[in-house]
Amino acid sequence: MSEFKKFDQKSWVKTNLNYRKDSGSWAWILHRITGIALIGYLFMHIFSLSPLSQGREAFNSFMEHYSTPFFMALEWFLFAFVLFHSLNGIRIVLVDWADGAKYHKSLYRYSIAIGVVMFFAMGYVMFSHEIHNLFK
Amino acid sequence: MYKHQNSRSSGSFSWVFQRITGLILVVVMIGHYILMHYTPESGHTYDAVLARMQSNWYRVLDLTFVVLAMYHGLNGIWGIFRDYKLKSWQSITIVGLLIIVGLAFSLWGIKTILDIPYVQTTSGL
Image (cartoon, rainbow over all chains, first blue to last red; front, side, top):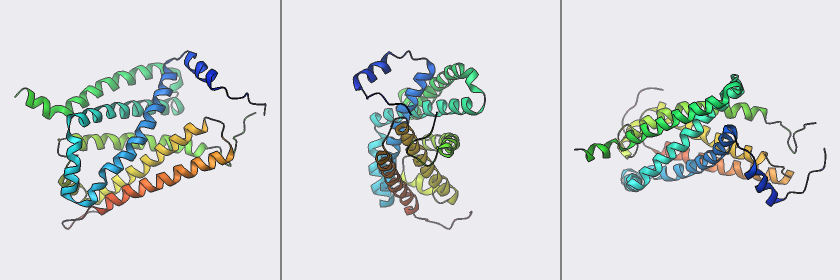
């Protein structure tokens, strides 16, 4: 094993920022960011559902906070993270197991297109109640 | 020449299992989103959860979901750490912390699911 160069933080950041990024690099970066965010959310999810063991009143009053427009918007953006991680995860599996390396760039474009459509479709489903009230 | 460092395993099992759990999670997540956002009430009220949890199938599904998601997530975090050159004690500390945190939160989630009472006689499973 050859000697490793001493780690230089400044040049590491510079190299990474200057590296020419194609769709695969962005997919890799975003997959990491969304993944870290999602495991963070899973911890919060387990915490926020724990009042279930304290019965109906405790849980319902706790959940009222999460039904405000602010938290509904957050939920919608959480779905964007879930979408990217899922669609890019499927892309990774196709690249690894199904010859996807030959068409990984068009796979990336398709997943972004499908993701954007599904994001707005979910926005309609999540806010359908509010949208309905708006045009009553 | 490549040789994996500071570990007895190459990680090939966890690599395959990460993909398998990922695919399972995508499928279950679709059902989860449909259930939780079908109506404003279906995902956010105690009675909706209580009604679902009368079925042991839903309990088993949710238990599997929380454990698989926790494994997939924490194994992913470990995968990020493995991209960097770690000393042996650093690997052991990080894996130890991930296992402790993972077990604690999994057990918390499992406890929450199992604490929900049965309010009527149930059939199935």
